[in-house]
Length: 272
Image: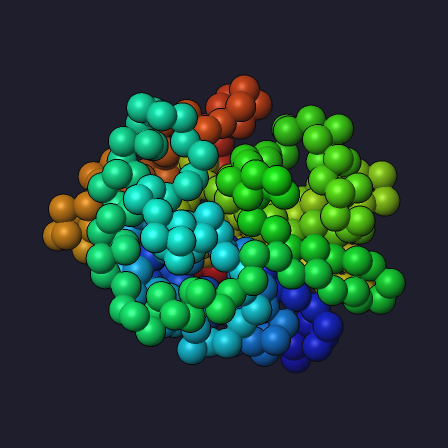
């Protein structure tokens, strides 16, 4: 018997052109009984891995609620970089100069047109709670918000958005945090491990009757995804991360998250 109601939400983002992980997530969502209208993607469907077209088409045909990430914003604006907010000259910035042109070159006109229809935010009300979906920050959509980001910064964003619950992404690390009467949820990402020494990827479920939050980890065929990246001569450090669960660098992280590299994150549910 399905333990989730028709009002509960499945949350994900950061597919990063990882078709194998995205396909596995869709299988899990269907097994759990979530209809497309109960599912929210917070952007960055396109990214580091080798199958941007297949991944975009999967999400499009699935019919879930979706906003753009900074990568989709840059694609539809015809930009020359990913807009990820990496420091100039940093390891991530250098690697992005390889994968972003590849991603742009391997999207069909149909996928580009669909990306052009996506909103940058979503806002809706369930049971008296105002829920807002963003990618990273507000003024800066590529802002990295982590569990240890100062509470004051998160409160500013809650106030700016007049939100009770914020669903966000971009930082690559899953967490759920209650701040006074507000809740910040980052479901983690589908397309890359969470720098915790495991190959698992992440999504979240918000139970709107009780407002409980579950962080779900899952396995998929990361070996195939890594090999496809190697075959396409895409960034070797990211292909390696898919197999080790450790990020190539900690350029975007802040001290608490740096100290937690290689420490397995506890999942409320695990899909092997």
